[in-house]
Length: 387
Image (tube, rainbow, N blue to C red):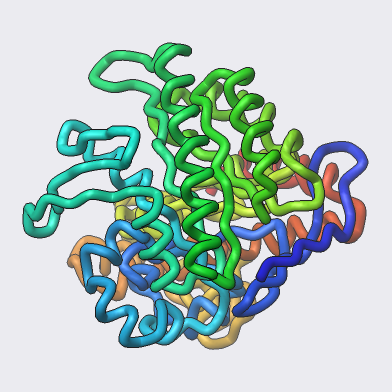
């Protein structure tokens, strides 16, 4: 089941405010979706995710197929009960992970052959198998199996002809996914994925063919795959608002806080990215006033929280109030990082996710109030100010 209600739009951009009703709950859009590759958002309890405002999270079809395996997830009736998360889940199709295997995989019309990165077993992933896996996972949003068009392969920039071949294969796989999804009587929602590389006219061809198939929602894939930032921004400015206005639009794998605000302005409703969690584990913190490197020696004795405007557990402690008593200092988090203590990345991950989810909540509030243009300008000024 999927119902998308468009509540209002911004007169000065393509930004929009909506609600997305799925089998496991209602999602307020625009939304950022934390990534839980192996059935967990690394270092964060499900209750903490709920407390910071997470409405929907991701699972990874490829990795969950490898471990724990479909028999285990089937035993639990799907991913929700297995990972103790009762809100919506979106699962990717495995296409990006197969792409990332590089020379270890062989693509054909039928599907992709590759060796398991876990135990070396020879495996074959097809559109039909991807649909079967995601049906067993019982994710609220299922992604079609696609071929992620590369940007640069060993110094070779993908040509227009190569991008077309890849895009047309993804369209054919979309039809097979749709047919198998229906055959399996999956009660959830299947999204098509627009491909076409860095070529706008190929994006439009892909989009037109997918719209003819009448998917419940659409994603934009093949960005953040190594292309220069201006190229990504060009495709992000071109494609989202051309998708059907009455259906949700999802930009896959993007990105920085600036990318999220710009993506919303271009008409995107849904985002995911590993950046807030991965960067947190590597000592990079996102704040209202720019990025902070907690490993820098200048933080060794700094009593300030990561972000004095933040109400997350790392910054405000149990008070839940910005600048409140009980928050953790930059000095303490610097110390934890230097010592390799697991509490360090747990706290910085909580902060980064809280920041991303709060940013999206502020965007929704600005769209409701009709002040998105002003919000966008103030956001840019704040982030440029620096920590």
